[in-house]
Image (cartoon, rainbow over all chains, first blue to last red; front, side, top):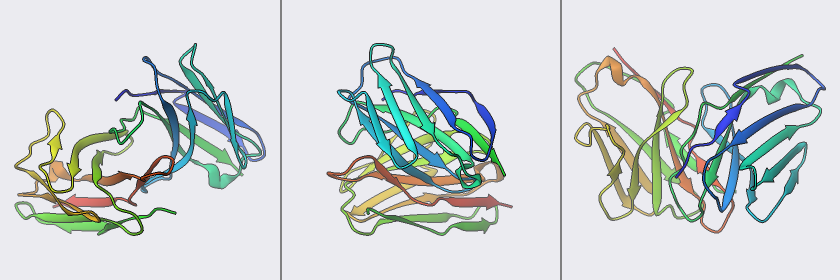
Length: 111
Length: 115
């Protein structure tokens, strides 16, 4: 298992703006997962992108993966106050391996 | 979708007592459960991995005699914090891989306060 490094550590935007956060990792992966954590709650799975995919969409979320650069980005379009949360990426080899997490990106969307 | 139900959501206990936290997979079989601890404004730290019917695997630095993990069935894993101390106060979260589906499902967490 390896930990992803999210960047930036904190991001503050206005409602309606887009939010972009990045994730870098060190060794080859089978997939990369993004999770959201609202304050004082468990993590919610947002999206999984496999190593043979370059881009994936889910509602207002767009995830890209560049395996040559060992990086991924999560874009949240037309942000809402309810998107305020911490976002974590987790690079994975697949199967039921243990996930480890970095410090995340703390996103604040101001109304 | 897959749901992991975690109880209790909050618990306050006295120093020296034990507290049990339960995680149940409601609509899938969780042969593996991961237990995390999260201190304020920090990331999740993996404590241990429990596997149904076998002993748990603990991460380095985690005391197995203090954090007892039991995974006696395919739908229930428990974490017992024994002889709790104030420094054990934290947010504990469980997680299970959702077989055949993308990603992992997390419980809603347990806020433990030891006084």
